[in-house]
Amino acid sequence: MDGSISSGCRRASSVLALAVAICATPAHAAERAKNVILFIGDGMGVSTLTAARIFDGQRRGVDGASNQLSFEAFPDLALVRTYSADSLVTESAASASAILTGRRTLNGALGVSDKIVRDDCASLAAARVPTLAELAKQSGRSTGVVSTAAITDATPASLYAHSPSRHWQIDADLPPGAAAAGCIDIARQMLDGPKALQLDVMLGGGLSAFTSEDGAGRRLDGRDLTADWRKTGGAYVDTGSALAAVPKGTTRLLGLFAPGNMMRETTRKLLEADAPRLVDMTVKAIEILSQDRDGYFLMVEGALIDKAHHQNLAHEALNETVELSQAVAAAMAMTEPADTLIIVTADHSHGLTLNGGSRRTTIPGLLPGTEDDPALALDGKPIPILMYATGPGAPALGETRPDVSSTDLSDPDQRALATVPLGSAAHTGEDIAAYARGPGSARIRGLIDHPTVFQAMREALGLPER
Ligand SMILES: [Zn+2]
Image 1: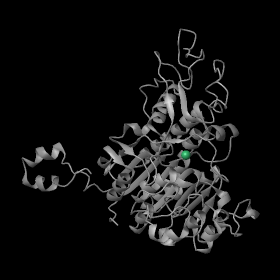
Image 2: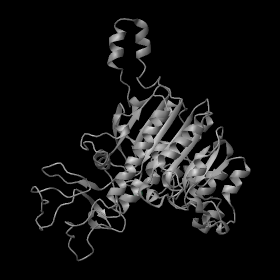
Image 3: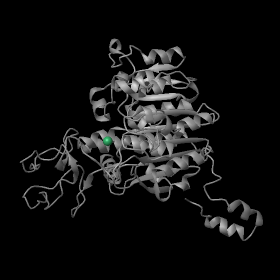
Image 4: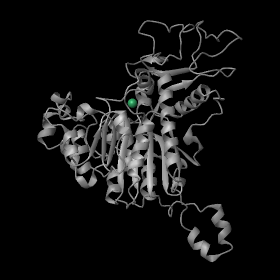
């Protein structure tokens, strides 16, 4: 809790009695935001931020070590404890739910309290809790979500869905008992839920959850939810060029740009695919939502940081972090700090490490030794600067680690070395960072918890406590 009175207020209070009354209020309490934009870098731990800032600077030809990502200039900063209700190390559903509902829940559950029983539809009614998007909508604001993942994936789903399992994204995924008990899949919750709570802008991947086999989707109920959306008067696009051409004045927009997760930016660029970048989706969402005079709440997820980390693709995780930084920069340019709270944070960390040496060098790369040769470890092999604790980059069972002296570590498809072999790198449990700018940003200071991020946004929007 931040109940402190600013030093400026203390000075004023000795001069003017009126100032005492004003300044005795906690510094954050009177700060109201018309709009809130929440950016979540999925898996964007502190070491990822450090490496991404160096990577970004070096690529732009400036000093990487002293470089700053866009949001690293924000005035307020906190470390955030991320543990879930049942685990020291959280995952995206539980952590996004803590950020978006203010309640910790079990790993794998979303939009629910810790009263939920995993995979049990019958426990949903008592555990369901409103999300910040639903509360913002009830206050008369517009709401939106942008993600480079499937829009039914755990982080975006935590904004609009309530489910005992993050895996119930489509009717085909529901266990028979759950469907019979009245639980509905996450895609249907997004487009079939109560109209008064429905998001106004939804941009991301995941088309296959919204159409049936006829439409190259995976739905078993034969429905085309995008057609149903259009019937209600909402606009629908599925390419980057169509998104760019969305007419001014559009107030309700659905954009689904990939069957599942969207392509990483490196791949999109290579293939010259007609799909939007994260920054393009962010800009369009803000353009649409900012037409609402009552304000808006928007969540933007850079999802592919996590997806790349899981594959030990360090170059790609850093590049996607820079993509998020550019989306934040666009949001900063389009909004005023006087009326818009922007928070940039992560849901959990990943086990990326920067190994140290005696000289500055480029990343990804090898620790320098002599003028021309890399430093060697006790096994006589060079030492990569970027490494993972776990993941598919580890040597196979019974093998020693490879000598990467002649490997191009800057190749986006090159896996970084990991220590413990896993098919998919494990999340890690250390604190993550949160950055804030705008009304109420002072709540994001010191050591806080994921639910505190929710409270900061709720208070800034003037939404009632439940
Ligand atoms: Zn993950």
